[in-house]
Image 1 (cartoon, rainbow, N blue to C red):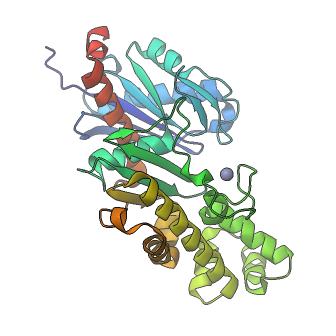
Image 2 (cartoon, rainbow, N blue to C red):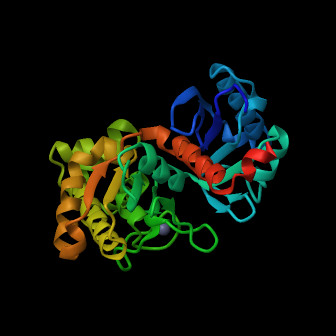
Length: 333
Ligand SMILES: [Zn+2]
């Protein structure tokens, strides 16, 4: 037995920020560093930066990098979890088939694990946040896009290849507005910050949103926050955009209640935090109206509790499962 506490590293690899934590398996954070990811430099410098920051976070926690037991990375984009590869993400230019698990475990000499960022956040909220104590939970993060994670019996549901849980691309409006992915009528097209801004832009171009056009002229741009302000000030088009976000989020939530019979639905992300007053009550009303009565009795709708720490803390939970489930992870170190 080593006299050192068992500490693990977790990295939230984002397009704009890297958040690196060092923590024990109970989720107690002993070191934490946040830096710009400078993702436009491509994978190699970003990976070097991830390792530097992990080392600095380990030092904060009072251990050397080599004393960490394992490291987990939460990544956006399309991942091949079977082979530990990042296949590509719009916010990470140049990451086409990067074997991140192999690179990290070789360079650090410890086991490495890769997970989708929203799945990691779902697991973090489930183990250490709003969903603590629940076993069946559905998580949505609504920000520039809409991410999701499905927790079944305390574990992330991955599907056959790791692509499950893309809840932002649930079709809720047949032939509806165009989604960031190119398809139509997905939840992300209607409820994400980018979707709301695109829809406002379309209305302006069609001459149907004079109020928002004025805001656009004054500010030089229009995002979900400014549209929310316009809605609160009484702009009808802005209100309608948020009403529709609430309506179709409610449709999505009702479907999840009917399919999964969850104990809890957790909502987080920038649009929920910045504009939740404009659409969450509506979403809950619609959910209660549309979902079946029996599963409705058991479900609670909650805001997230961990914010930006949900992803890295979820990686800590995933590493804990790896160690407890397989034990060889310990003897490999
Ligand atoms: Zn989509």
